[in-house]
Image (cartoon, rainbow, N blue to C red; front, side, top):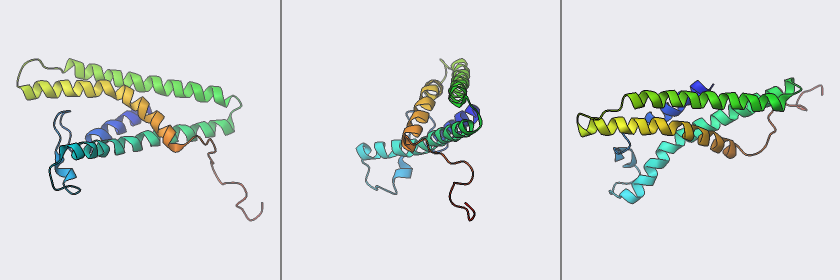
Length: 164
């Protein structure tokens, strides 16, 4: 599950279509909302465009954790201990994957060539370093956006059948 979460997080970041580097943005996607060039307004709109898919991925990850925890609570007697251990394992695997990705981009850093190549390699390394922290923060934010209710129904809700 952490592998899919990291994949979806990277896909939601780079899949928006206008990021080649941290310092290059294409404001073409904002022109449908504003036709006058206004960087002070376009910047937050582009950041919101980037954060929406990542917030959806974080909320989905938190929902999967909540459903798995509810399923464990209905089937096991020591569910809270199992849920905490499972969350720790998923977090550890998530951070290990993010660190492997960061080491990969660290080994691909360039210190010679054009300024674009050097800047792109540094940007990719910074993004890879931020994925670990961002994924944890997005999962926490997704859990916060879902609310604090622990009532998760698995299967048929009670009281809705003909013969109850």
